[in-house]
Structure formats: C-alpha cells, structure tokens
Length: 305
Image 1 (cartoon, rainbow, N blue to C red):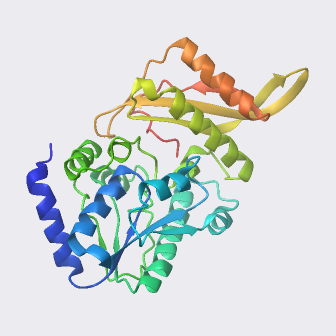
Image 2 (tube, helix red, strand yellow; image 1 turned 120 degrees about the vertical axis):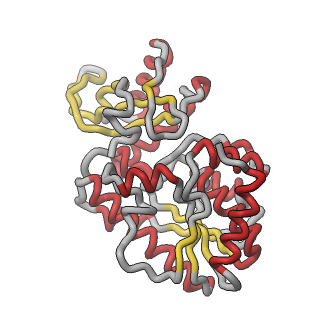
C-alpha cells in the first residue's frame, strides 16, 4: 500500500520540477484518478493549471452536470462539447483496438486545442499502473497509453499516479481530503460507453447503453462492487406486447476486485436481477433481453472491449 505521507509531497515536487514555470492542462474526467492528479498538480503549480473536461458523447448519464457541480470551485474549468467530433471519427468502426486508437487521438487533439488557448506546454493525466500493464502487455490499448498518437504537440505528458493501483489512488484521494463522491466513485473507462458497445457505435446503442448503465449503478450500489456496468452486445428476438421485436441484448456485469488486475463476478440475488431487467427492457422499446455475465477476470476482462 502507498505511503501517502511520503507520496504526496514527492509527487508534488516531481510535478513542480517537470513543469517548472510553464503552464499545463489536466485531462479531467471526474473519476478518482484524474481528480487526484488534478489536486496534486494544482498544489504544485496553482493557477498555471487549466482543468479540461471533454464531453465525448460517450459518458455516463448526467456526467457533464456532475462535473460542473463537483469542480465548480475551479474557476478555470473548461467544459468542451466534442460529441459530434468523436462520433464522426468513430463512425463505422467496429474493431475494439481501432476504437481505442481513434478515441486516444481525438482526446489528444482536443487537449492540444485547449492547451494552445491556455498557452500550456504540458498535459497532466491520471494514468495508473494497470493502464500501463494492459497497454504494454498487449491486452488492450488504454486511450491514455497505447491509444495515444505517435505525434503529440506537448513538451511533456505528466502522470503523477502512473505507478499506483486504483486502491492506492483512493488512499491518496482520502489523504488529500477529496469529496467521498470522488474518492469512492466506481471506475469508468476512459473511452466511456464506446467499450460497452460491441461493434459500431450509433446514437441508438449509446442511448440504450447510457440508460442501462445508469440503472445498473443505481440497483447494485448496495453490493459495493468494484465495478458494475451494462454493455450492448448484439441483437436477439423478443416479444413485446403481441409484437415480435429483433432488439438489443444488454449484458449486466458486476465484479469484486482489489486492483482491477483480477476480478470475480459478484453473486447478485434473483429479485435484484429481475428488477434490473425489468427497468432496462422497460426503458427502451428496442431492448429484447438482459443477461448477467458470470465470468471472472481472467479469462474475461472487466470491460467488453
């Protein structure tokens, strides 16, 4: 476990030394990793840090409003509406790695534009150790590691929590006094709902995935999962009313883990699963069925792509 008393001043000193007297932008997602990175960077360089939240159109339900509320104390917070640019770039793409690479490049280009406006030479991001392991090991490219383009218009990329596991980042968050909503928040992938949709990303799939994830997070909160999610994995035949539908299949997943490197599927009681399927199938007329994923990691990964 990380020694927070030592880690925090060391990380602040390292950020200060690396950025020196330049300006920086921080890739802010609202999750604990980027929030801790932001807090450390702000302590190191103060107002020379510009927090940037990019709304990709792939985020959780109500995410942008939550960002505004959580980080309203940051006067320099910038919220970028990039939904159209991301969805256009992803149009027609079905390969999971190609999706991650497109998202990684699009993120960097958004931050480059914002950095130019802020006269910033550095990008700070909340990359953590499992991101690096999975990207460098060829398991999957994380948008902030293996998904980055080869040419990046920054003097440097600063990653203050790059050597920490998720539970260690949470320890640092508590030490820094971050709001519990942030410190204990369930992980959400950087590429967002793009990796919870199998195949091509469409507005309809996004609508289904966003509402289904909202339902799952609400219903499974009492189980205190490491991560709970819903993915749109294909189509199947169903019946609604007296009509046949060829609708979406939503897979629900809830896992326990310490660091995200391995995970066990949670045992969820039948009534809760039935309530989840009823809410999800009732929320969208084109959802035909809901299934529960009982696969551990390994052999599966936590996310679907």
